Amino acid sequence: MDRETVEKVARSAHLKLTEEELERFSRDLGDILGYFTILDEAPDCEGFGIDPIGVADVLRDDEPRIELEPDAMLEGMDTYDNYVRGPRLL
Amino acid sequence: MSQSSVLSSLSKINEKYLMFRTVTSQTDAGDAKFLFSAKDNLTSKDMETCSGSRILEGYRPPFDATSIAKMREAGGLLIGKTNMDEFGFGTFSTNSAFGVPRNPYDLERSCGGSSGGAACAAAVMEGHVAIGVSTGGSICCPASFCGVYGIVPTYGRVSRYGLLDYGNSLDKIGIISSNASDLGKYVAIMAGADPKDPTSCVQPAIGSRRKLKSVAVPVDATEGVSEDVKKAFKDGLEGLKSMGVDVQKVEMSTLKYAIPAYYVIATSEASTNLARYCGMRYGHQDGDLSLKFDDYFTSFRSQYFGEEAKRRILLGTFTRMVGFRDRYYSKARNVRQSIIEEYRSVLSGCDAVLTPTMPFVSPKFSDISKMTPVESYKADILTGPPNIAGMPHASVPCGYDRDGMPIGMQFVANHWDEGVLFSAAEEWEKNFDAVRPEVSI
Image 1: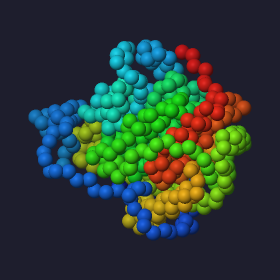
Image 2: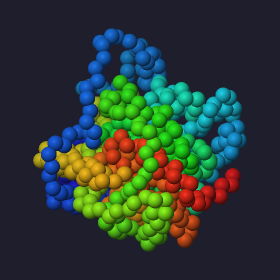
Image 3: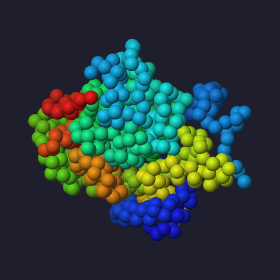
């Protein structure tokens, strides 16, 4: 895979790569995609889904409940006055 | 080892083998009926959960994964969280940010991966019950390399609630132990419908144990496999025949597509699942908040994700991109269905499909460091097929090479048919002379 494509994919994945990483991943991804070309010859079949087994919707009554204490959820997070601290928007 | 001696020597054992990321400080087992460990990608209230990744260092979940909660309810005491490849990305447990577990048969060799710490704990502490997680081979591979029993139930049999996703259509929670009877006993405890994981809610009850009467061996099951593994597998087949099991040969033409299809699906899912690790919610939150959103996330992820995590995120992001999605992701899902159908067809005429578990014995760390990513991925060639198909499968030890390194063979059964695997492992154990590793601490 060429470096420009790797850079584009990395940007999309929120990764910034060093020069050394760009070179290495460019080579590795080229090798891996080369190995994947065997899929081109695989026969097609019908009826495939997302999961390997059949799944069904699981519904429950819409009753509010607290399973996890909100305070427990905030433990370990960078918060102030019940707000979560994050990077700036603009 | 008694429960109290395990607890009192846990830190010392871990110094030598590095199988745990975290160990309990408890020295008294109290009323515990059994001791167990859990792979470090399962959330636990009282222990840090890092999934082998620096990005999650310091994360203390506020809840137990369903599998851990059920083991505790059954009287189990969680003694530690086992070391693993970062987010399950590896075959040798060498991709952990927190040290590399050592094979109890040879400290210069790998325990396998990604549940390497779990298999190591099961091999070192006889009778210990280790919860492992398999996405593409992460239970059977380390079970084989460490000479113990491992089972991966059908996809959806054990709730994934509280599991830090790698590939959510592939992840399965199972058991590793030196005792075959533990497989059925503890899978039964963890199994069952859980509304918090809808994929667990379609399962039938676990059937009763059903004696293994016949196995099918794919004709190319030993292609590319080392001579030592071939010999042990042949001995295993002879052993099964002497137990009255019928052995037939079958063509399974779709299995050769399993590994590339697996890596496409797994990395596609992983690259979206790992988007949540951005420095605001879990683990490290020490990025530069003066940066803009995108720059903050990017700098944080670039700093803390390991090399293999980055490689798989890039691969999965690429295979989902416009223009490539049909060729890779859609095709891989299509191939998965072909593999499922071929397994079903073969299993309509026999109880299990049998192959060696791994194509070679546990390699030395010095050899692993020379492997290319493709060489490493190809090591999953035998464990990948049942995993992509969501079929239950189990690895049992079947021999040792000239250096005394363990070799395993793998039974694959139809969806929801774990009963035949429990029975096969237990019957096999009665007929196999296991060689335990010499453990000195």
